[in-house]
Amino acid sequence: MTDGNGNINSFLIGNYFFKAFERVTWQDNNTVLVYHVNPIQSYKRKKVAEDYYAVDIRTGIVTYHPVTKESIFDYGVKLLTETDSYDQALSLIKQAKEMGHGKAVNILKNLEINPTLRDKKILLQQPKQK
Image (tube, rainbow, N blue to C red; front, side):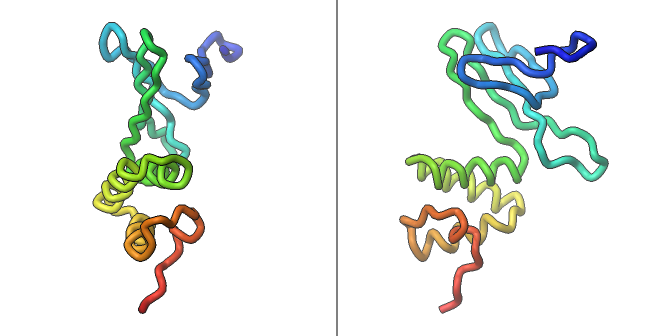
């Protein structure tokens, strides 16, 4: 889709609809990188496009690569609560914690108490002291 000036502002690859992106680049002959504009803006109100999707044009497989601490945290929580990718989710949440994301600490403490917990609202709460 294009805007009134002929600039592309959204496109569809496979089942993925890309709307908020800053740039598209070729990584190699078979992979296109689509840099996602994060909904969280910098303090100067500029677009932040660090997270990206790697699209394999041969297979159509799209792989998300979060880069900022907020997107790493959000993606980890999404994997934890919506998929069976526990190890990958835990790794991402630990990475977000190391980058200084405060809510990651609560999730990790709650998972120590109850490793089967998957309710996002409960995971984000401050664990009760014993």
